Length: 85
Image (tube, rainbow, N blue to C red; front, side, top):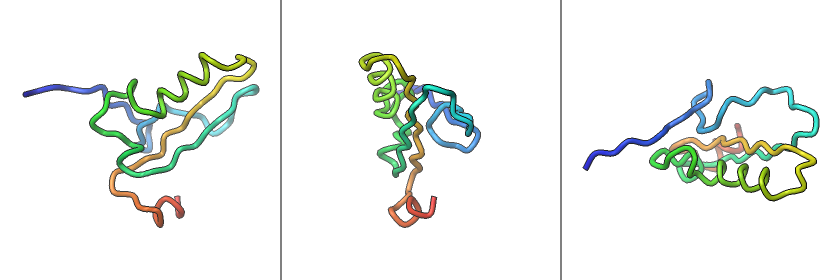
C-alpha cells in the first residue's frame, strides 16, 4: 500500500510552520518540546496534536489574542536532550 502525507517543517527541521522570534502583539505562544510522539512524522501536518491545539485555541477562545503552538518534537529525543534544548 502506498500513501503520502503532507510533511511540513521549518528551517530547523521541526514539524512546525516558521515562527519569527519576534512575537506579534496580542499573540500568545505555547512551546511543545518532545520526542517522536510530538513530531508525529507519519501523521499529516494538519492532523498532529499541536496543529489541532492551535486551531482549537484560535477558533474557540475570546479572539482577543492569536495563539501560536510551536512544535519542537524530534525523533529519538529523550528528556536529557529536551532539557538541553
